[in-house]
View 1 (cartoon, rainbow, N blue to C red):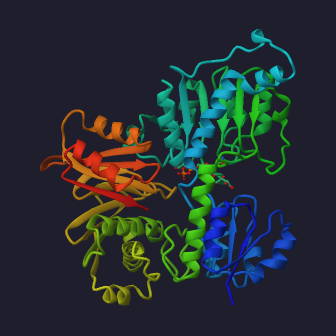
View 2 (view 1 turned 180 degrees about the horizontal axis):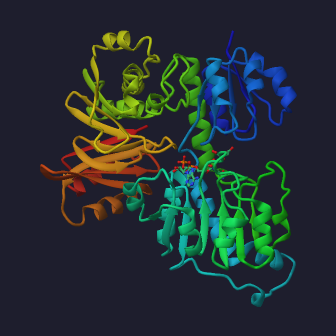
View 3 (view 1 turned 60 degrees about the vertical axis):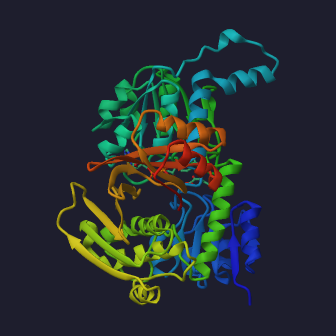
Amino acid sequence: MAMKILVTDKIVDEGIDILKGKGYEVDERFGLSPNELLECVGAYDALIVRSATQVTREVIEAATNCKIIGRAGVTCDNIDVDAASEHGILVCNVPTSNIVSAAEHTMALMLSAAREIPAADAAMHAGKFSRDRFMGHELYEKTLAIFGLGRIGGLVAERAHAFGMRVVGFDPYCSAARASQLGVTLFDSMDEVLPIADFITVHVPRTDGTYHMFAAEQFAQMKDGVVIVNTARGGVIDEKALSDFMAAGRVFACGIDMLEAEPSAETPLAEFDRAVLTPHLGANTLEAQMRAGVNIARYVANGLEGLVVPTVVNMVSKEVDEAAAAYIPACQMCGSVLTQLAREVPKALSIVASGSCAGDMQVLSAATLSGMLSREGQASVSTENADASARRHGIKMEAQQASDSRGYDSIVSMEADGLEISATVPGAHREVHVVSILGYRLDVVPGDHALIFTYADEPGQVGRMGTILGEEGINISTMAIGKRADCREVLVFLNVESEPSSEVIERVAQAIDATNSWAIRL
Ligand SMILES: NC(=O)C1=CN([C@@H]2O[C@H](COP(=O)(O)OP(=O)(O)OC[C@H]3O[C@@H](n4cnc5c(N)ncnc54)[C@H](O)[C@@H]3O)[C@@H](O)[C@H]2O)C=CC1
Ligand SMILES: O=C(O)CCC(=O)C(=O)O
């Protein structure tokens, strides 16, 4: 009998087709009440949701046949992940699927609020051509404060620079290296940032610690005429306090995609023309939904078939030390990169871990091996079968702890068939930073598609790469250049937003006279 998958929030048809094409029975049932979900979920082997469905402990307890829950988006805050782990259910997401869309929506809200575009548009539609009523503000040479310099905050920083803004930020978990790479002046406290910002944008997760992180006390410290944008989560901003400061004319305008009352439109901000409100549209683009829907379908199918799911956010097979668990995605990713650098599954793997993550080398080894084999579509690697799996593939594997964590809280370094990679996961947000590849030191957060080139360090090389990729319509989302003390060559790591063809890669390689090139897919 075919396995059954329940999809309770709309994902793209292409994702549904992938599942049906693999022989699964797929039921799309949107807008279920909590009781309806509880009643039907027990019949399904997998569940796919976006942000609307609340997958509570009760739902998980009722999902007695469920093996995997797929979240077609970034955040899993609508899923009780602990309950899923306790019930042996994998939870996976698509962590970079919609971040560009969310960053672009942030810029759209910032510009709309600063120029009062919705109110001007409404006036035009009402037949009023009233230019004098609207006097906006430029972004140019203004100070933008970004709270939360993770994936989306980082993309917003890059975009703000293109508008000529000065970018400052506050994120207790952001490294100085990342801030400097993003061109953001990092401050140690909110109190230092609030009085200097002309524009404020929020990109933090909703946690107990960030609930009402912007309340009357914080608004009182802001400059008069500030513009505030929130595309993160409702509740991070106290909407009542914000509307008081809007009413007093202290806040010029705001752009809000996330309301505390979601999915209701109820908010005290609704009475202000200068409050630009959207109903959680950050991820609502064809491109983001295509990435999210197609990839979540692939990952859920992988989970049901016992294959590697690259974006699992929990570990269900064994009690895992929390610090080691945070390094599972890092090890999976490094393993996958090593196989792609070697252009085949390497035959010898050595893992060295230092710092707090080194408490469970068995988990780190299994995760690395699972990443190494993932490109081959090999069966899932767990802590229980890692040794046997390595033997089956003829891989000699060794793992050890080291005392020197090179200034990081924790770091994992791997060498496979002479190829090296090291990664760290700073702070609580679990973003994997690669800090060394093939001995070249850098700091990069790899995305879904990346290009790596090694070449002679000469002026004009970056421009040549950018020109060719631009001509081919391939956008570079981030770039890092790695150096080695012993060598005049550099290594460039380009995160790109779409997969270039081998002809394009060859064109770039020739233009910069690259000594080596790789296309990496994660
Ligand atoms: N509007 C929409 O449709 C979408 C909204 N989101 C939301 O955007 C937010 C950011 O997403 P990502 O950038 O992917 O997350 P991320 O995990 O990459 O970054 C979050 C950052 O916030 C920082 N942070 C945590 N607590 C903080 C605090 N108290 N003060 C300052 N910084 C703090 C973390 O260190 C981290 O760097 C999330 O809340 C997510 O739910 C994500 C996608 C779409
Ligand atoms: O696409 C969605 O359902 C919501 C996007 C979002 O907020 C997220 O990915 O965290």
